[in-house]
Figure 1 (cartoon, rainbow, N blue to C red):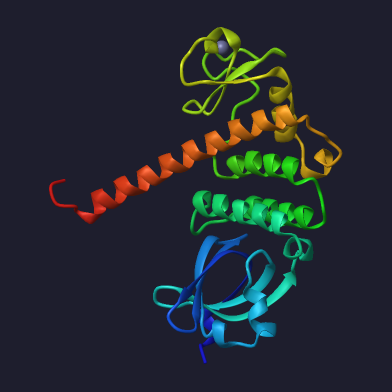
Figure 2 (cartoon, rainbow, N blue to C red):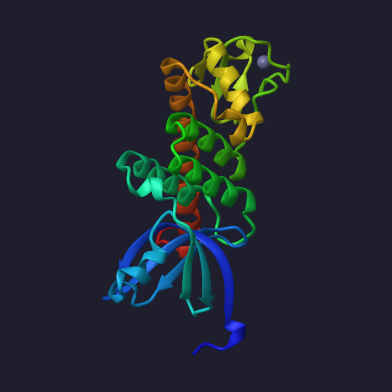
Length: 257
Ligand SMILES: [Zn+2]
């Protein structure tokens, strides 16, 4: 029995789980106080499903964890919110997996992440209760960027600083925001955003989930926003992965470096 100092409680949502050894599972959680957290659920694959069900992906769960040498160990887990609408709909479950992949790629281990946690929980809740998933995903992508420190600048031109007029603009991933037509037109590597898509993007950035549920997007506007946000996310994630690769080369002392 672990002693008391080694135990701590946290709420968490399982983003990913992998089999580990014969009966264990490695879980990747997102938590409000500790960011992304890797923990070990011992013997969980041999438990009756009634008990093991509390450590399934995409549930809000209360965990009691014990500090371990490498990984902390799940000693108790009790589901608080199970988002049943996800489990009965393969399409919605697919969106949840997409969300989990993005959070896993962008969230940091350790450190407070209340805003990110609230965003994940609230998006899963609305996805489960039947909100229009398309708009929900665009909102999620945009606010995830915000939580991860990549909030796109949509108010002023990222090159000349002028306040944006209601016109089409040019998204510059490397500058983390949009350029005005004077700075962006004809420049290679920028993504043009129509006025309509730009307006919706600003609306999504400036409002909370409650305010957007009545909004309906034209399919072409959604398409534009989907391309812009997903390309920006891929650009950031690949850049982060390169940074990680660079760090491990520097610290790992690869021969020849
Ligand atoms: Zn400009």
